[in-house]
Image (tube, rainbow, N blue to C red):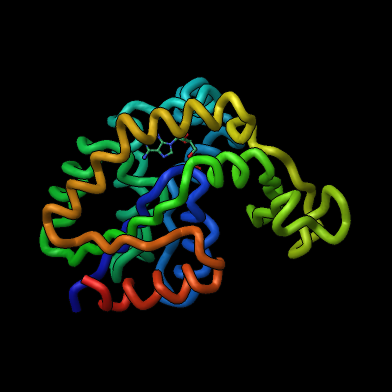
Length: 217
Ligand code: AMP
């Protein structure tokens, strides 16, 4: 059986992380998020985590070679044999090219979520993430029932240091310069499906699931 690799593209705040968790469950496919892998490394105080820290906190991209090595090590694990779902990778054309080489023979599909800048800023700066389970609340759109506590597991909510206004604007600028060209990389190969990320979360999910299963190309 050919394994399928699903790539979620779109600016920070487009909903990749939230939808990736739902899609991974629906497709029984591991959710591989490079941002989460870096945060895990940072939490454990590894050399990689410490190297990535200054880039992450200022909203810049971590250098390609560090990301690519970390990602390839992760997708070598047995749970990724039958395919996986990438969230936050590739973020540069060089990363996309490295992935092409690594995935020879595997089927690839890229889902591209689009959301207007003003909405992205509102989404990111109001976001509160659970320290324990990674669940994301929003102070306006999905406020927790108990202030500061995750609805799912009761864990403590915190604001990611890169979700502050100044860093969010930097992340969006970096996205436009370095990540936007990745769309064309997949579009030119007939592998990209565009999805309106400003519909309701359930509508976006339905559209993504259908596309992941082969509709829409
Ligand atoms: P995310 O959780 O996907 O928003 O990622 C948080 C931060 O991790 C980014 O702002 C980057 O500093 C870093 N990062 C995550 N994925 C990548 C990647 N593919 N390439 C470079 N840096 C990345």
